[in-house]
Length: 302
Image (cartoon, rainbow, N blue to C red):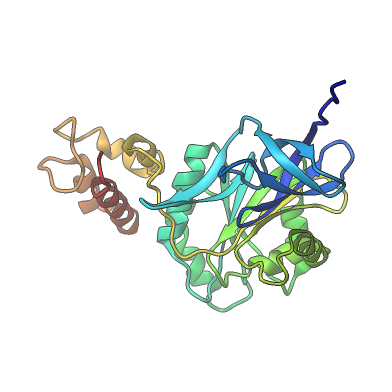
């Protein structure tokens, strides 16, 4: 007599290496999960099908079709940030200095994933905050909202950000030392307790600085995914036309080039170079374009 194999629908809420925690959508129970074979393409935020292997463990049998996946990649490896997200909070701060290059790359990745990006200028109480706002103007000109936050005014931070999480899953992303943890702790007061529980369940101890976790607001009205800080953002998974989606500020000038296959870097009668010369295009944005296209040209072709 055959025994029916139990299947549960769940969402992945934490990852650490090849270990995962998934929460059952129906019961809320959490399972320490592993994948079959050598499969490693699970991301926090994924909706999955589990087969329980006891009360606390389960195998991930299937990853359901994703609405989107935000990740970075170079020619050797990729790093998945999160799947099935509705928005991206990209955190910057006046000190230490933040990278416009990384913010611009995050925007390109978000644009291709169909995810709306908002920039959180954290530590907005610092004297250098005004200079940081000026530095961010080229991104603000693209229509990216710039929101200011400070740990010294937690109520204002919560009032500003909490409505943006209602019925949504938002990824918190940024360089190291931008103050992401302070934002997380204001929005999710029991985040540290949840982190300890996840770490114990995964058997990861306290060495969990490279993991990603999904946290629910206290009233379950929204979700925030915290991902480790980073210092590089490769876009090797995107093709040329996809990369260009992240430069809407160059599109109009590109229509004025003499050659249809203009690279906008050295050709005569290039609309982009002419717009740059006339200061209709931001110099920093153009330099980011040239760096990204040089990386694209340098990719190995097989």
